[in-house]
Image (tube, rainbow, N blue to C red; front, side, top):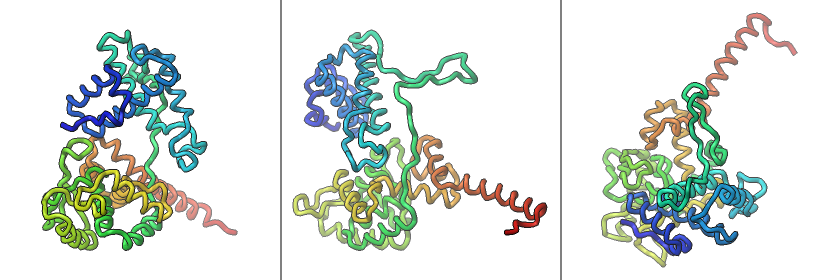
Length: 349
């Protein structure tokens, strides 16, 4: 069982009710990343309560509204470099949704403990009798769904050309992230035993997959395979122990498993040098799934490869690829142009 890092959530650690709630989530075997997110979000709310002089156990709707206002107006941590909010003010919609969701779960616990009469955090719900299947009332916050950003072909090629100046490990990791459409944790936690080099397959273990489902992905036969073989030899010079494939080559932690944070910093550096500030550890995954959609792969095949639970998630990449829209528009234009040719005889200048 992973220990809760209480030093990251000092206010939660000092609040008996909050501490107990977070421990319950750990006992329920939630993923460490989920526990971390819950801890950080609850700590943020407790900090807000401390700042305005509110008691968390007596939270009401007015106080929740004040918290939402605070989230929407506080200085954004990315400041002037933020790309999605022009003013640099307020947290992103996704971050605000996460904070409010955790607060709702915490308030559910307070209700169970009879510390609150009802949950003051609004949630969308179905109202019987309003239309077919019922209508969904609006939740506390509007929910925005944006398509993920992907680089253009030229931008992607620019980044790949820069790889020759990177460590062999970094080259292999970026190519595997793309080939296998891997999430950050799935990539960084790969072990030597996860590879079947004869078939160029990689086993993504259930404990590191977001949906808890094991799956098999593949990697390229030429470049990725060649670089991976070279890195295997390099890996054995760093450590003869089996286990994690990607190891640190720094003076500070030589031979130690590479951390998630360090890989994020490496990719951030690559993106900065390539002039692509929006490129993150998740971008190769987005790009790979979009390319699969553009190759006209079946929806269920893309979903299986990506490890998606819901096809709605996979559909985002179909939309992002532009395949459906482009082909539909092309068909409509073809019919229109044929009609013009027959009835008008072409356009004369």
